[in-house]
Length: 165
Picture 1 (cartoon, rainbow, N blue to C red):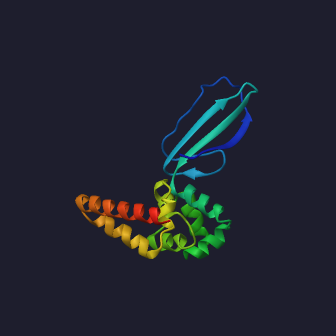
Picture 2: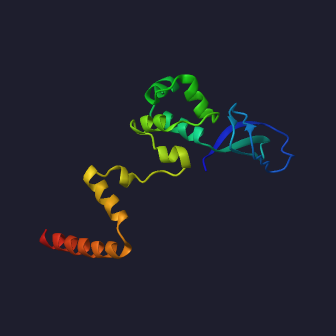
Picture 3: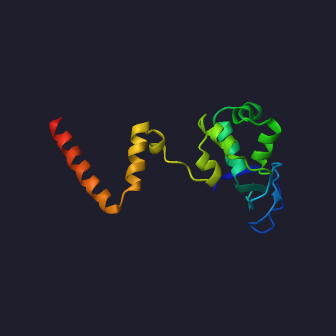
């Protein structure tokens, strides 16, 4: 879950250590979230109230991916085949992107699995060639018994290759 410090302001420091909201809320940073919003106020000895927001939503992750690519909303929207307003509504969590959009942004390097689920895709699988990916797909399709046999064969072949070097 991405924790981000969004704002620091003076406060009395008297209130409770944390306030948790679940539902649609607005953060002091100005964003509205339609999923889960958690706000915790942490009171420091210097009487500053640090507001920490945690947002679980595809819009925030989509924005994070866009920024990581160094693109403005309008540029990113064009890559996805939508207008800037639609891109903004995706990032605010007001609308969900369709598969055509997700396919288009995946082609420019967006980790769509991360955007949708919050879990990063395996970088090792992204680096596979077409033939390697095909082998992985075939391996996944066979029975466990056949997988064990393939594992033994590959292990023996790798040992032989290592000895030859």
